[in-house]
Length: 290
Image (tube, rainbow, N blue to C red; front, side):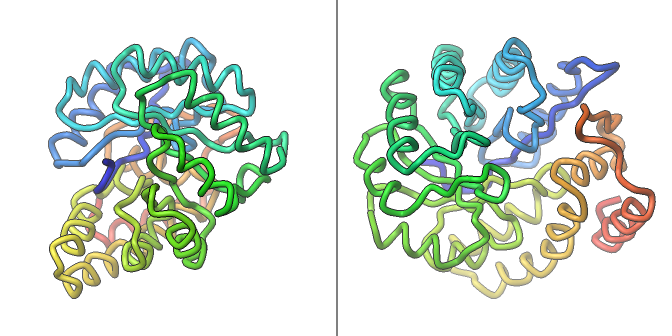
């Protein structure tokens, strides 16, 4: 359902408020490059610092700007099940194609708690495809393959964004169940994950280099593995540079360097250290992205 490259879109701010004009421009840029889909209000979109009203407004703006020209998977997760339900129902009501729902962070629920959380969200928005999002390095909780297998029995849970950094995990999930797709949550591992069965990626670097990422995924899907490897080698240093500081600081800085946003972030995200910014700029120039 969600094969290909879906960009984890940054959220532009101006003077402390969401810049909806720039948000629309970012959407148009992605569509012009041929991206498969757009994911607003994920981790890269600084969702944790958006108010509930802002969160809904960003989703609505993206859905309206896209106008059916590509997929929209709205980030609707929260560590509060009630809030995740409300955001997911909103995404369905405004016409999103799916919802990306992260594991509840900080709370550290049990596997049974995770199952009940995702079940409650899925049942509250029947018919809306749900993508589970597992990134234990940020949330403090790991959604295990056996729990994924149970959740995959629910019709609306169709995929998982896997960001454990483990090749084994994707294999373990796909061995546990054939009822769910795996999407890479780590740009640098996308090609290896596709080699064991992932169907694509929710990508950070597609904000700054969608063409290369699309080329890699499409080449692999077409069976041209050597061309996919060439794209991977071009992507890899940029992908690693996106994590010289906490995401989304580097990617937002990179988009600013490209002249497409002002780079404003919300605390506790803050501007890059000068030395790291110089390293990032050098890598982007080497890659031909500036």
